[in-house]
Amino acid sequence: MESSKMHMELEAQYGARNYKPIPIVISEAEGVWVWDPEGRKYLDCLSSYSAINQGHRHPKIMQALEEQSKKLTLTSRAFYNNRLGKYLKKLCEVSGFEVALPMNTGAEAVETGIKIVRRWGYRVKGVEKDKAEIIVCHNNFHGRTTTIAGLSTDETASADYGPFPPGFKKIPFDDTEALEEAITENTVAFLVEPIQGEAGVIIPSEGYLKRAKEICEKHNVLLMTDEIQTGFCRTGKMFCFEHDGIKPDVLLVGKALGGGVIPVSAAITRKDVMDVITPGSHGSTFGGNPLGCAVAEAAMDVHIEERLDERSAELGDYMLKHIRAIDSPVFKEVRGKGLFIAIEVKEEYGKARPFTERLKDKGLLAKETHEQTIRLAPPLIIKKEEVDWILKILRETFLDELK
Ligand SMILES: *Cc1c(COP(=O)(O)O)cnc(C)c1O
View 1 (tube, rainbow, N blue to C red):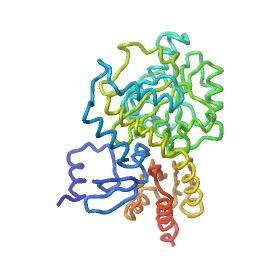
View 2: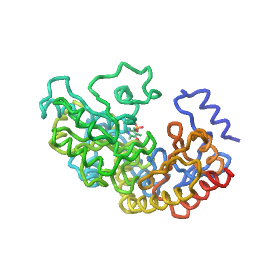
View 3: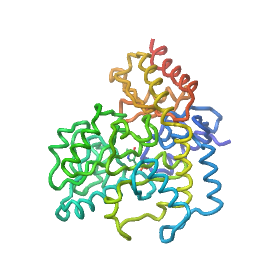
View 4: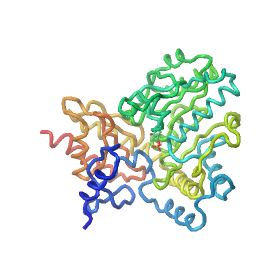
C-alpha cells in the first residue's frame, strides 16, 4: 500500500530541501477538493499560489489538453504553429493590450519584462548605455532567477546568491513620494505587484497604482505591473489594475493562465514598446508551445464564461466579512480583495505554522507566508456552501477551541 509517509520520506531522501511543505500528500484532485493516498479529503485554500483559479482539472481545460495532445504539442518557434496566433489574440483582447511575448514560468515573464523595458530605455527614451535603472519595492516577490533574487529584500530568498546585477533601486511599497524621489533620467520602469502576494497579501492604499501611473507618465517611465498572482480574477476583477481605472505599460502574467496544467506566462504591452524586441534577441524553446496555447485559451475562457471576476468579488466580500466577524483574539488583521485573503496572527499566539497544520488536520489546506500570515485563496469556482464550510473550520480553530 502506498502511504503518505512513504512519499514524504522519498522526497526528503532524494529531493533538495528548498521547500518545507505542510505534511500532506496529494494524490488526486477535482475542483476545490483534493485527496491523499489514504483517501482523506481536503479543501484546497491555496490553489497552488493562485495557479488553479479555475479549480483542479477543470473539464473544459482538460478537454483542451486532451484534444491538443492528440494533434501537436511542440514545434519551437523555428516554425509557426496553428495555436499561437489565436492564443495571443485572445490574451491581448482579454488584457486590453496590443502584443504579447509568450514564455512559460512567471520568473521568465518578469525577466522578459526587464529586457523589454531596458531596451525601450536605451532605444526609445535615450538612456546612456548600461545606465538603465528599474525601481522595485521592498518585500516584493517576482520570482527565483538570480537577477530577480537580487531584487528581493527577503534574506531567505537572496542570501549568498550574489553578486547580483546592478540597475535596480528599492523603495518602500505603497509610497508614491519615494517613487518620485527615486526617479532619475536613467529610470526606465517601475516594477510593482498591485497587491503584494508572497509578502502576505499586502494591499496598498486606495489609488496607489493610479498615482504611480501619473508619476511614471510625467517622467517618461514605464509602469510594469506583475500580475502573475493577482491576475485572472483573483482580486475580483480580471486584472487588479482595473480597480484603479488605469492601464500599466507592461503587464506580466502567468500562474492561472496555465489553467493549473502547464506553465504559461507572458509579458504584454503596447506595440511601440514591444517593437524593441527583434528576431534572435529573446526567446524560449517551450514558450508559445501549442499545448500551452490550447490550455491557456481554455483557461481564459473559463474565467470569462463562468464570470469568475464576479464570483471572486462577491464571495470574497462575503468571506472577508464573516472571517472578520469571527473576531478571534488571535487575529491581528484580516485583509483581502476578492478571494485573495490573509489572516495575520498576533505574535503572542505564536507563529502561523501551527495554525496551518491544525487547519490541515481539519481538512483545510492553507499555507503560511512568512512567519505570521495565513493566506486564503481558494479556487474561484468555489461554491458559497464551501465558503461556509471554510468559515466553520476557521471559527472552530480560531475561536471555539481557544477557550
Ligand atoms: C509566483 C510569482 C512569480 C513567479 O512565478 P513562477 O512561475 O514561480 O516563476 C512572480 N511574481 C509573482 C507576483 C508571483 O506571485
